[in-house]
Image (cartoon, rainbow, N blue to C red; front, side):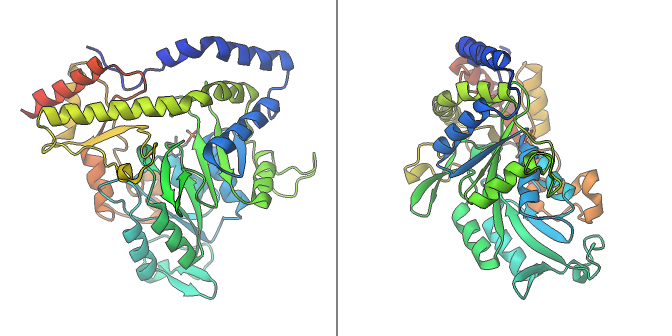
Length: 408
Ligand SMILES: *Cc1c(COP(=O)(O)O)cnc(C)c1O
């Protein structure tokens, strides 16, 4: 049985009519960029995520760029994030002229480890007045600093809610308070995911100073092209984001700052607004599929041989304790297993085969192999299995059966 990693065809079949109508509306309105569809979608996202402000943009990547620009993060600044993420997270930090600093992951969740973050800040950084400074010259680890004195001012932390599971935001928030850092959530893979935050249930993207989603077609809420969304809580910051997404223009043709073209298309917003009301039921279906994988792996006695995804907040009374953007296992002889599955027409993926600290484009940062052992181990051992709301139990049995056959 052929099992694709992701199949969007059923979702489209179910929504074809309203999606086509929404596209027609836009075509007939001749408003293609930043119009009423985008505004309505922003409001719907605010309500869904319990966030005060949402600003529609052209992609998840551009969302992070706009956030960093609006926070005034640039040369001489550093931003802490995880090396076990998609390139864009650290890429945007570098593109605004700041330096990405990496902190290793928790091997159970694959998310940035709050304990490692705390240790990093205690050991590697010093407080100079109000600022937290990373004295990289002292360690001789990273390239020469643009400020000339060999130090970098640490401004923010970007936790990434990888695979649809929220980072431990409570300790991260505490650390950010202690060190006066902004928290920017990379919620590209986690729209709708919940976390027990400050005695309430909060949604991914709405817990930090700012956060963002990607609507890349394969994300849980996918556009028919590129699109993204910024969330933030401060009115003034939201205003800045709107200015930065449109060439730094305010009023028209007067540019106080240099922004970018990070604007959201009306057609994408219209399609996303049709899909958003279904997102909750898709998350439920993804979780049911994840539960079924768990049951099957247990039934075949494989839970000693492979590691299933952690469900850290399952017992905390949250609905979306995990939204399973990906269902990722740790397996022995991962590459051979992947080959074995491919021979049986079962698609899998590796997120990610190489930590960002080992990527060629970040060689200038001066990190080396061995710096982040848990990231490197995850890169060697993890495998993403097919998951999407409509996946059939037969397809899943086929995946688990093929894994059992390999592990025998
Ligand atoms: C998809 C993704 C992004 C980038 O989003 P785009 O919309 O593709 O620009 C950023 N971070 C993570 C973790 C992602 O998965």
